[in-house]
Image 1: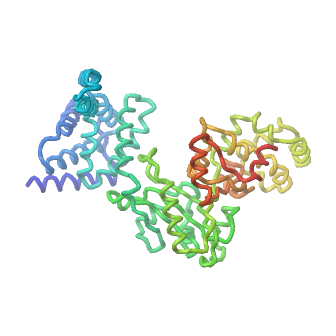
Image 2: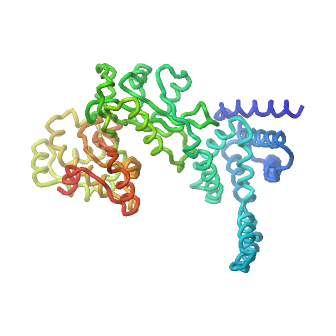
Length: 460
């Protein structure tokens, strides 16, 4: 009978997870808060066997999913504040440890200190592992946590513990690499369309083109979330570096002969689960994909990206003086001939702000090419957050050992591309002979490997 009750409760939780956005809201009245506190205490105590654990976790998940934002905030704050380590026990264990240092009791005292610092929050969180969809429930719960953190600082401790748990559970050793093809289940293909974060998939025909014989799409999956791609990369098999994303994604372009490919272009990498923010496995995905491609296409020797520069326009707007310093006298003369008369020009301010109309004016586009490429080079090589590049895509690829290989003018003339980087895209090159050295230089000193032509642009 208990087993049947667990099954019914788990079925209800699975249904609620699948349609969590449609769950009925329940205000956190005192009665509701008392019930939540009682449920959390039962989970923290961990009494009973496996059936009891599963039933408690299922009921707790059901309670959480039934709450509106106010109720969920109260639920999470209760875990964060009331189920952390007991400060008195920690202080007592710390004093005992300090007294035991250098004696035979030191190691036992150390173990007791670790036990005192262990919070009941961990026990509550790990119990969700016992139920189907429990890991997905926790990933989605962290999405809520991240939304609430700005206004509710007391949730930080819970977020840190949950991030640590998810990092352990989503260790790359547990992940499975799979190729996504046009013959993959329709539900998976729909998720690829929905999760694509770099270049929108506009139609089923567009998707089919990206999964053609001269393309590859790979995704990481977790065994506890087998229907959810965690991160996926789209690859074009080519004979040279790609310099224009519209051409690369042209559905009417002839299909290339993949057996002649010498270059693999990673043109889109999309992380799909906001709740796994801070859990890094993108670099492992690229390494696994490179191994897979080298096995299937031994002619491929060049591995590079065609990447956006998402922070460029935003940075230039905040650092207008620095950006305009890249414009030489010769640049201003060419711009004047194209209708932009000096740095105070209203038209220039529109261009620098990310307006999308100017590429249709060939003379203006030609005049803007050199100065904006110089601004882009300076941004990638010099704009920093600490020792790391300010641009998030640059931070990812350079941190994984890539080199800034080439800047491509008007490589993405979509509204998004023009709005975030004046249509400029960058090739990051993964040179197997330099990856390890680049990673060490980047990690140690923030050093950036870049082609000489890109460095010359940044200095001009």
